[in-house]
Image (cartoon, rainbow, N blue to C red; front, side, top):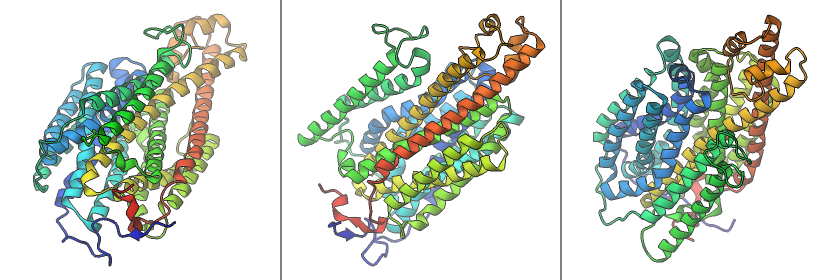
Amino acid sequence: MSETARPAAGITADGAEADERRSWVPMIGLFLAQVLMSFNVSALPISLGGMVADFGVAPTVASSTIVVYGLAVAALVMTGAKLGQRVGWVLIFRVVLVVFAASSLLMVFARSIGWAIAGQALAGSAAAIIVPALVALIAENYRGGQQATAVGSLGSARAFSGMSAFLIGGTLGTLVGWRPIFLITLGLAVVVFVLSFKLRSDRGNPDITIDVVASMLIGAAIVLLTLGFNNLNGWGILLAEPGAPFSIAGVSPAPVLVVVGIVLGQAFFLWTRRRTRQGRVPLVDLSVLRRPTERAAVYAMFVIVAMEAAVNFTVPTYIQIVQGRTPFDTSLAMMPFNLTVFITATLIVRFYGRFSPRAIALFAFGLTTVALVWLAFVVTNDWETLPTIAGLVVFGIGQGALVTLVFNVLVTAAPKELAGDVGSVRGTTQNLASAVGTAVMGAMLVTTLSLGIGAATQEHPELPAELVAQVDLDNVNFVSNDDLRAALEETTATPDQIEAAVALNEEQRLRTLRIGFLVLAGISILATLPASRLPRYRPDEIPASAVGSD
């Protein structure tokens, strides 16, 4: 490459830090703020079984709490970033911590699934400001090597939260219930609020205006995209199902919402570029995505988070709902994955000085692809087998390396004054990907399951058509064997027919899970395309053209 390499911002030519070292106490608060958000997200899949039992809703309905959280963050994070710049990051950071605490109380005292969804909408709204605030506050409080370490710790915090949420949440969910899990998020919010008084104070800029048109465009685009993807199964992937609220010439509204969302997203980019050319302050400075390497990092980040969300939704749903096992069993099954992600996300920075981001990303996506294909062939109803654990560990290594790497590519290539914009891009990408990953995987699994069981009932003469009609076996969601037995006992089914139906239930759901892993493996292979465009240079050799230039 012809670009002239230079040291990363905040570091002198000889590698010495440009500013004196500061206490790590403020960073503890910022680390825990990331833990707070990630713990909340990780706790939701564990709580699905409890919410299904408490509120009497389907797993896909309970999973709306996950989708709504991601929807709120993704729709509001860009507006939240500009609001933080206008009001001041420290002040608004404290305000939204109070809001997050209130959302935890809603979860603890929820009387219906509507309360839980409202709680996660509130939590997502607060996180929409916390996400860019973390990047901006790190840039404000740390320089040089400390700043690089602080940025890397956010990736470790996400992984640590996933690991601790599955372990602590699984234990609480089994012994006490799902509600006390959110007392932990309440406690975290209080601790972070106290530690926020150690942060270096900043002043807001009242001259900064919020682009209302852009805010409405991106917010509507995110809402429509998420609603469309989340309802592909219920409303129909192409043709409208009976459960669809309306149809357009027989076409399902779900794909229509996706298309309109994409159009509004493009309108947002056109409007933002026009506003920038006019010399006015945009909702987000698109210069952070000017170079192909930064855009590739965003594409890769979307795929990474979507895959993680799909796995974190699929496996707990299968273990708790289909197999009827406890949240603690779920935490044990997911522990190899979450522990490996945490360790890898923490240690991957040691390789930044030896390998380029592109080399690390391609290797990591190779690992996730191999692991997902392996899991598709070896997974059984027993999650404690060595082959299954090995697959989850390899997938965790690739995931942990990627989640920290792509964020560092964006942060290290942007100047300090654009830290909030980088944070908003990161928040929009991660939370939209999480919502889409969860929604699309849920729709795909249920559709595959329905097709599989519909075909399988034709091959089982011991399950006559009249019995299939009584329990609607060819139009099913994920149900446990115990629930299926209870439903069949209310029909004319004989004991032999009940056992045959339960066996069919186990067989088809395991088959569906394996197909899901293969689909994720295909997505992982496709992700090597944006990964191949990540920077060839190491983080300490950022080209001058990577920061603030065309």
